[in-house]
Length: 394
Ligand code: LMR
Image 1 (tube, rainbow, N blue to C red):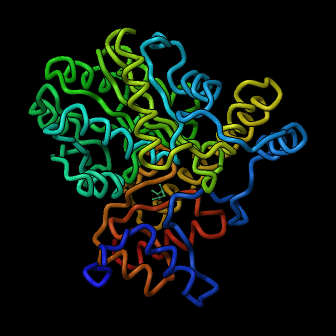
Image 2: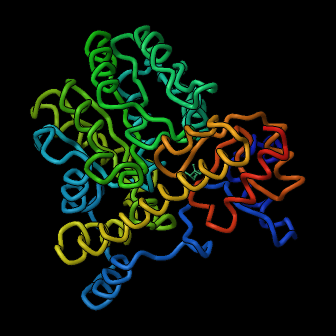
């Protein structure tokens, strides 16, 4: 039986981790996988997480199962973080998931159960795991234009034109903030236009929000999600705690499914619990518990928000420094968009051949579509990257 298996296409982001590890050059620079790194290249455990872990170690008396959809306190805390009071709580079904990816997978399975013929609209480009999971689940998929490579900004006219083709029953996958891989984002006026298209077409929005707090601030980054969720009858949201709480390996995420009225909530909630049971039974608890403790305790929350804000401002400063260095190195402002982008990533806008050249000749690793993890840079490596980009003729 196992001999029937074929090799699966490699994930282009994960592939880079291995290649970087195997590169013996001590001058190599990792701008690949989306993991935050400080100026020393380390991914520290956030201070509030450490404090919460200490408290938990003292107070936790059992490791017995939690609820099938996770703890209600975790659901409430995360709904508060992502949605604030934008949608009445009694319309929201929610289930803890195995990371943000688990929430995406469960959301798509929920759609497949409710509307098997739905087409899932994804941005071109998007995070590669989106189309990969949709394909794996055998669902229909369509792309909408998103990025204008010449300006490094959103191709908003193209996006609207494509989204207007969606039909009622279709699902439109949107990045709530900090678009991955481009770093180019809609402003709130443009989000209002997306809402208008959603209302006109009757398509259901599905928001993936994995970088809340990495763009313009915790509240600011949630504004689009809140606007969309409060303006349409139904909405799906997959949120991740990997990045903003720095708990990547704890696999902490949540799926929220908002129905038109409170009457449908119990059935949706039961379906979310059912899906958890089919896929992995009970969700992981450790990360979710830490997140709950932090979000519900004033001291821990302040400690967390302060550090998250430092992380955000640090990435913003790296963006400005890189744009400045490239302005000097290129004698032009053609890389100015890097300072306008938000979140962990920016798409440089060059060919896979040039990306390969940067890797081979300069030991600089970025995803083949020229996505760079800005947090992988520091004051020492920014001039090196800027020079390499110009030397390669990009
Ligand atoms: C990324 O986009 O690099 C991260 O979300 C990590 C991953 O799993 O791809």
